[in-house]
Structure formats: C-alpha cells, structure tokens
Image (cartoon, rainbow, N blue to C red; front, side, top):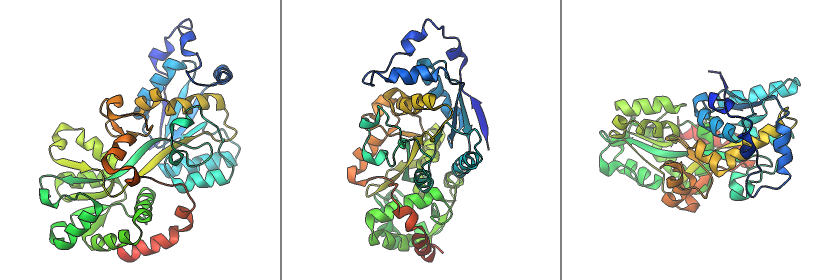
Length: 367
C-alpha cells in the first residue's frame, strides 16, 4: 500500500526564524564549505523520499531532522521494495520528477542503479564512521540493518530443542526429526528477494557445509514469503521455530509483553546475515542539497538514534544498546556472534551472476 506523508511537523513549523540560527550551524567536524549545502537547500521546495519504510517510522526521524533544518519540507512515499526501484526507473526514464533520496533493500537493484550511473557518488562527512561493508557502492550508505535470526515458540519447543547455532539446529533436527517436521519455517530463496540475499550470504559464509545443513532441514521445513504470516503462525503454535527469519516482525512481536512471554529469539551464533537498508541520492536529483542534508543526518549519531526502535537495528558501529535506549545495534550483533559471524550482506556481483545456479540448487533441495 502506498502512503504519502508530509512530514513537516507542527512543532517544526512553529520554530521561529530567530531560533533557527542555531539549527543552521555546520555540524561539528564537517567541512566549512558544508555551509553552502545548507544555504542552497533553503532554495529548494521540498525533499521527496522513496522507501520501503512505513510513514509512521519516519515521524521521529523527520521531527528531529526538522529541528536542525526546519525549512526542509519532507515527503516520504512508502512502497514495497520492488516497487521503489521500478517507480524510480520508470520516472527517470520518462524524465519525470522522481525521488531525491532512496532508502531501500535489494542488493541486485542497487548494483543495477550503480552500473547505469544513476547514483550520485556523494562523499558524506559521516562516511569515516562506517566500515567498507556498509558503503557497498559509491554514494550508497547503509543506514539500517535487518538481521536474519532464530525465533521460537517457548510453549511448544522444548528448551533442549532450541538451537544454539545453525549447525546445532541441523544436528538436533537430524537426531529428532519428528520434533521439527512441518513445524519449522524460513524464507524461500526462490520466491523472496529478502530470503535469497540471506540464504546466499549464509551459504557463502559456510560453503558446502551450509548445503549439507539445508539438506537436513529442507524435508522438515515449510517456507513463507512474508515475515508477518510466519510470526502469526508461530504465535498460534502452527510453527515452533523460524530460522533465518526477518528480525523486524519478530522484534515487534516480542515488544508486546504478552507475546514476549511466548516467543524467544536469538542471533545465529555461527552466522547472522544482515540485510542492509541503504540510502543514496539519485544523480540529477531535483532537491539534491536537501537530500545531502538528510543522508548525512541519517548517518549521524543523532540520525541513527532517531531511527532506532523496538523492531529496527541501527548500524553505526560506535553506538551501543545503551545509546539507543536498549534498542538493537550492529555492535550488539558483533558482541553476540563475533565479528566474523556478523554477515553484512555483500553487494558484489556474485549475488547477481550466481543467482540462477543458486536457485536451481535450492529448488533441488527445498521441493
């Protein structure tokens, strides 16, 4: 469902221009000529963002952003991840007004935009705070992450059957298949872009061992293309365990005290794939200066704090859970599973070039 949200808050609009002098200062440690971007943005009418993030999730971000830059009228358009890129490409091809900033998942689609020369290779002043894995392409910066995790129903799955790692899950399933048969679920790599990226990253990390584990689990598993139905079926007891499952719906569920009594979750200790949610400015954006302000804000400490929430993970490495009111952080994943097992999904061409071969092998196992 498409939602347009004019994000300038009443609070932001009521700020007096006298008070704005403080808001317009160049942020600390930014180059002095950043003042030109700030001033030039005042001549732009609005900032249009295309994303797969719901409008209500932008509210705190935009309010905080407008505290700093109150003249920027922000509009966000929420679509599914595929539609974001399709709409942008159609509008760009027709030379129509389109997004000033894109925030979306989809490694293959980002690679496609980059190869077509459609991304502004903007160098953010915040870039040095992020590792190379979070700057996958020129001008593309990861601002959020969606880890793939274990989630289980504590009332159904015996404590001794809860896996401590993916290897442990495969071993437990092989030893006691009836406990898991038809009661475990994951994304299908062949029918879910999100699932494909996660499974590909996990298999790349473990090689043939991953395929052995998949071979053990496939006959016992069901697949779902969306995390919502997975969580609902887990809650009512149709499923007992989800593996390589999307964290957002799981975390949203356990934020509910009633469901928190029922559901447990953990990172996957021998490999937690993280689907990055990057942001980038399209080349030739109509409101490029305002887009730069927003992109830099999203990457900043204040911006990351405004993005944090019960069902979202911020990725700036120097932020811990205590910095975001106990929220989820990339640092927490590294602490839980080790740096080598925090698998920020690559944006290399392997994912594109090996797609057909991977899917063919997947379908031969998950029948």
